[in-house]
Length: 314
Ligand code: NAP
Image (cartoon, rainbow, N blue to C red):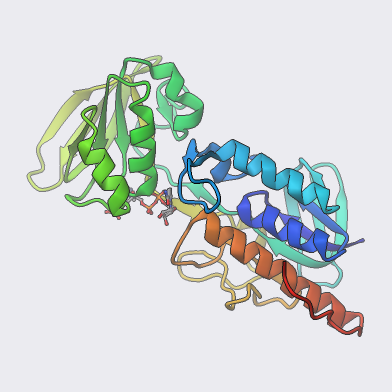
């Protein structure tokens, strides 16, 4: 029996583990299949305070993991297969074991959305990728297509110019959603060009990507565009299947919480991108993880009928 089980190992999960461990809660963090979450797949994180030169995502996440362990959190690499949040103490099952806890923090983040076009699944790993950090190196001096118009598409498109001969960002509208600073850098990068108002309708190739089929959304005109790789960054959907029917979700499937991270089930908290939030950043995920852990501590103290230790949060 743990005081707190944290499900997910992105910035929110590790931050919750740091705060819970430091509060002397017996804490188990179950990483899931992708330790470090999405942040660990990001090459350069330039807007996380304290790193004026930026920091590589994998390094930042490794530091957070070490910090959580330093404060006593137990971290296991396993995947949760089932939870029971309907009976207290809560039960969390993984592939290899079953655990119980007085409180749970859900920080399972989001998964990248699929285009849903022919060729996308068949050519995955053979030119279709969702991770520039992992796969960019394989496309040195090649022609790369990036699909999307948000921060991920633009940031990762810029990153890919380190390797690629040319990067073409294909967006379904004629305006980017990405932050202004990233947009400016992309517009000024001589290796990047934009194809506006256009959808990718098929990814073409036999055993590797050789091109994409495009459709201009204004004129309906279709065309073929040669390329060696397609990196897809069209947003994400929350990882909530384990919790569906057990905690309240909003219309977009994000977990509904109050400002401090309480879900509809007392003792169950959510933090990071899996809960409805207007700003999806490492810094906001870290903040919500800390809050959720502190609320969990308060909840456990009340459960055990002891005073919540008011303290400065250092
Ligand atoms: P996002 O902001 O949701 O952007 C997704 C992009 O993909 C949008 O431009 C959207 O077009 C497009 N799109 C969605 N569905 C599509 C489809 N079926 N076909 C073609 N295009 C489609 O997602 P994100 O860029 O992955 O970012 C996710 C969150 O993380 C955001 O809150 C973002 O600010 C944050 N983030 C921040 C940073 C940073 O601060 N440096 C870096 C990465 C991510 P429309 O514009 O037409 O909707």
